[in-house]
Image (cartoon, rainbow, N blue to C red; front, top):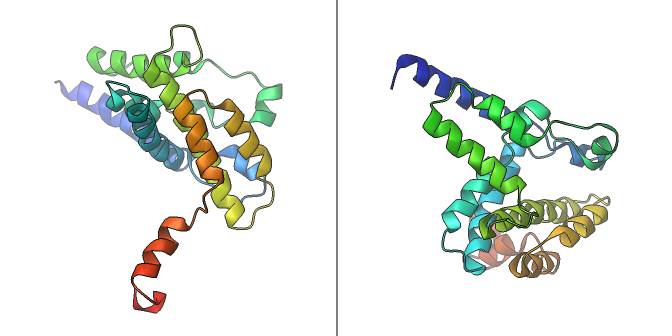
Length: 203
């Protein structure tokens, strides 16, 4: 690989780093202080996509996880446009954006990354893969989980997010997990763990 190609990969990596600093815009409308970043959202999306794909019987859950990890890369250039913004502002197709983002990458890398975004964006079409549907559901489920966490922390503006995300789920597993998320206290894992070791002061 040439020095030019390596520098192009480094440049692309720097651009993806913007997702760590890009806040999820919809939470700000709901008065969430210091909302999560797009990168934080994408991480849990990838984890959930892997789990949903296994439960849905996918032969390739790794593919679903990869779709989840890459699906928001175009937002380095588009920003994270929430439902209010999308009502008034039309943004470019993410597939066009990822094509531009990957132009300088070696062809074998650029082609694969473009295919990932295209597959995720096709999740509701007639030719959608199971992995794309699982990645889509992971994206929505992650938002639902985050809304439940913000609500548990005291934000009272989360019901619309929970309702919208629950309605958007496509797979049987996604729908079941969405309901389970609503029925589970976000702090359960920690409360159950702390109970096994006695007083928190000894942690």
